[in-house]
Length: 465
Image (cartoon, rainbow, N blue to C red):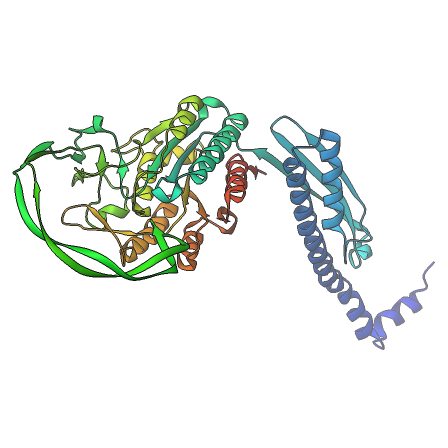
């Protein structure tokens, strides 16, 4: 029984009331402040747990040479490495990993001990992290934009064929065959769209013509060599330099001779080669309201192979490539690689941008060159003129094209094959979509390795959850 006298004294006695009231009021404030600290700690651990789970799942998906048991061990080892450290040593986790044909699912659960929330009987907070890794088997459209200039002759073009065919082999092995679309775009001074395109609404192909040259005679000087000696010379083959021993002489006039040439007939034909429209039409994939100029009287490589799902047809076209034309004009290869992936004329086999986004269609260009730009466009004629001092305009156009292509959502892989010019290497590196998509292949074996890595990257894995 409580004595009323004591109760009355408790009510009327004010000594120490302030301290009691503060203590009672401070308890929820302490819980709130301390709870915030506990929650911040939990959030930090949760973030670290998620990163460790993501890394572990990616590790399992990437370890394709291991069996499922080996991939699980690799994932668990990765998780342990990434989750270790300050703030997590006391935290016990439970991991689960499931591997199927096309995905890896990794989950981890943990209980984070509290410090302040214990006062409210909350001793720990449960957290969970999950990662789902899928391999990209969706539709893929790839344009192989390959340098076929004369400097690629011999073992270089042979190695390029092997490398490109191994790349297509990887794509068709990894993905559904009807979802892999590959275009082959050989380039040098020009690109060849095929003589069958004559009459197309987007093309201004000149008519073939015959020019008669009458017989004529003229006087000319002959020259003789004096002061000859052996020396070291530098030769340039389409922007690629080589040094070799050579014989140097001074040449002086010797005598005049009369030279006569018989009458002859020259046939000027259009072989499928195309030039450039005026800027900015030559750096965009806009519909060709102004027709693209066909260039007659010149030779260019094999015609472009539009997007194709037949690996045999693609590989046969790669085998037919030949390095027998001088002049490097990289913008020509780039713009036609872009057009090959487009849904608008000249080529319409590509998926339009909206559908590509909705259906997860991946587009990529693989750009490869072994030299510097040696040609510049003449916008009056549409021709590309090559020679010493040329290439500055082409370099600017290359950089602009790379930027526009990437803005269009197309991934660019760039390969510098034995390129010695630092400025060109830098240009190609900046052209690539990221640092991992640029390859400085100094020799044939490095080119094979580069295309192998590109093939793996195109058939890549991605974090879907």
